Image 1 (cartoon, rainbow, N blue to C red):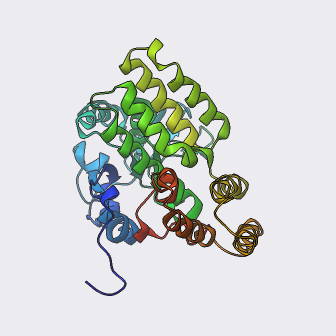
Image 2 (tube, helix red, strand yellow):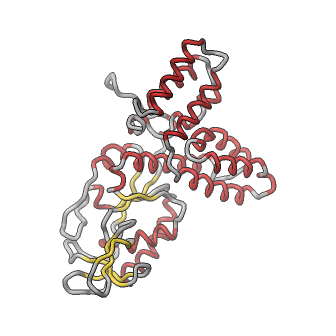
Image 3 (cartoon, helix red, strand yellow):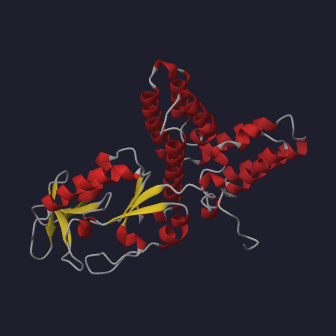
Length: 327
């Protein structure tokens, strides 16, 4: 193992299952016989997740190569029509999708990456042709719509949107957090497991939504009034609603200041000034989030703060993904 390499953190030894449009893995299943391999997904993120590929067109029985298709008609209920011969493939695709999402229940997916601009798999802004033969970019792919309706809480993104580093980090943070929840709490839920999970995720949740964090705290505090299954179901919805809200610079600064408070009796005046200055530079966009976090992690180890060391905020996703080097 090279000097700059290290084994995967034990926190991420379990590889969660994430659905993906098959063409993004490099499989030649596109209508023209090609693929759309995304090397970040295959070579980087793929080291830490187990991909579950889905190709709606091929799996519903259409060949490779095949005639291209598009959506037309009503935005909320469009038809899937072949471009040249104008065959209506809507029922074929819809019936297959209804069965496929039920099959995917057994996979315990924590996320899905769809192929952008696809009339079957695109999440948003898919052209829908109206009666005047003008496209409006307001549609959702037939399979993507069925999936998101069936799994409304599962994080979903498109390959194109994941080129945005902020959207990429938010999506990946959500899938790993949901994976931890499913592994640590969901199989046999108890109030004790939920209390332990919530305690470890407080700062991470604070960086997304202090308001929802407070609601979650109240839910856990009154957890004995609900059955474990009902309690954990409500908690999971709050969890994913909170994480869907992006962690802004201001919210991160709030968490960094909160963490700094744990060392007010340990640091001398010079260290306190240095820490405040590093956080200021982050707030002003002069350094990435990783800089103040590295200094705070140094203090966590130096002063043996077990509470902060256990916080997932410090390590929400694998270090190798380098997602906080840009923030």
